[in-house]
Amino acid sequence: MKKVLYTDFVSTEKIISVMLEQKEIKKAVTRSNLYKFWAKVVGEKFAEKSKPYSMLGGGTMVVACENAIVAQELMLKKTQLLVKLQPYMKSLKMNVKDLKFDAKKWSVESFEV
Image (cartoon, rainbow, N blue to C red; front, side):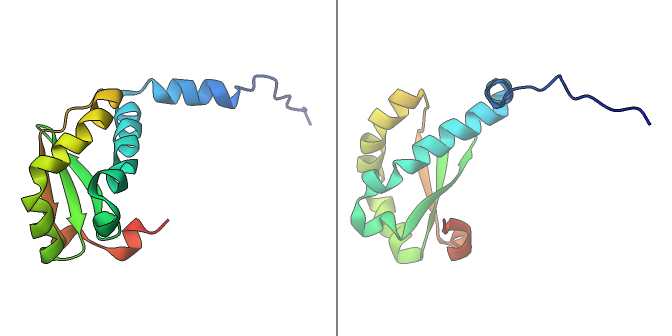
């Protein structure tokens, strides 16, 4: 039986750098980084009751809300939230033009870490 020698290993750093060159992965990482700042933008009161859910075409961020009341309160603060998001978007070179608040997207299991 012939022995197989594995000598062409690729380093983890090389694999990650190749993956990050892919447009879809780069976009997902950037969005994930923006989502991490959500709690700072909405404040302590709404951080546990709302979470970024997804991005739609045209720069619209969909935010899942615990209930319709939270969605309504955030809707009333939309302009202020977009202003607070601005420095984070600028540093990540993203453009979020609108926020859409949706209580139907809320699921406790999908947001637990």
